[in-house]
Length: 192
Ligand SMILES: Nc1ncnc2c1ncn2[C@@H]1O[C@H](COP(=O)(O)OP(=O)(O)OP(=O)(O)O)[C@@H](O)[C@H]1O
Ligand SMILES: [Mg+2]
Image 1 (cartoon, protein in one colour):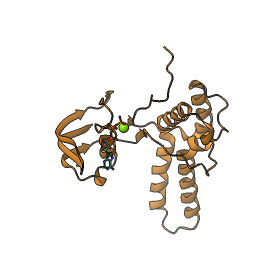
Image 2 (cartoon, rainbow, N blue to C red; image 1 turned 45 degrees about the vertical axis):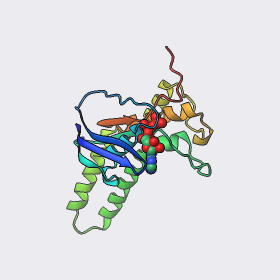
Image 3 (spheres, helix red, strand yellow; image 1 turned 135 degrees about the horizontal axis):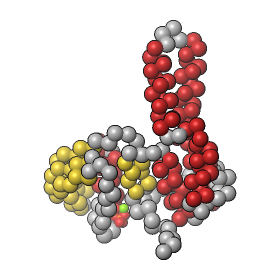
Image 4 (cartoon, rainbow, N blue to C red; image 1 turned 90 degrees about the vertical axis):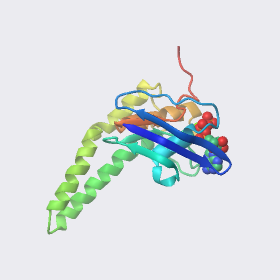
């Protein structure tokens, strides 16, 4: 559940929100519609990073799990030769590395209990996102999105729409409890 109560926020040159209130309940889809520059992306940023904004009113986030986020803009580092597969694997590899580090630490630790707890937490997180099968899941998801054989393509070689799809796949694969997509369909051709 996300709740805004009498939320006000302005940039020095522009007032965006003046005492707005809304609630997004669990298990709903919600569309946030407004013309260019009215503050949609700013609201998303406030929800994701409330501490970075000096707002008035109250913002409550009660989401029991991961939050997925597909940003409106994403600047790719042209120098970084990252493939679609590497980009989609990142969260899984990070968790795997954490698991390996904990196992290494266990080999020399005197008190195993805190490490065991940590191991269980990371392992639960890994399994919750079907970590054991992430490679085949990536393959499947790309196929469903019409991006078969894209695993080894560089992100910088994708079109805007292709990259948007890959971004959505990445966020969906971490099984978020809540996902925010800021204009996810902007570059996409929808078959109707
Ligand atoms: N960091 C900033 N400093 C000052 N003004 C900003 C800043 N970020 C955004 N703005 C202004 O705040 C307004 C809202 O911007 P925002 O990006 O939230 O709009 P939006 O509703 O997402 O628009 P769009 O549909 O074009 O994506 C705009 O007028 C923008 O110029
Ligand atoms: Mg925007």
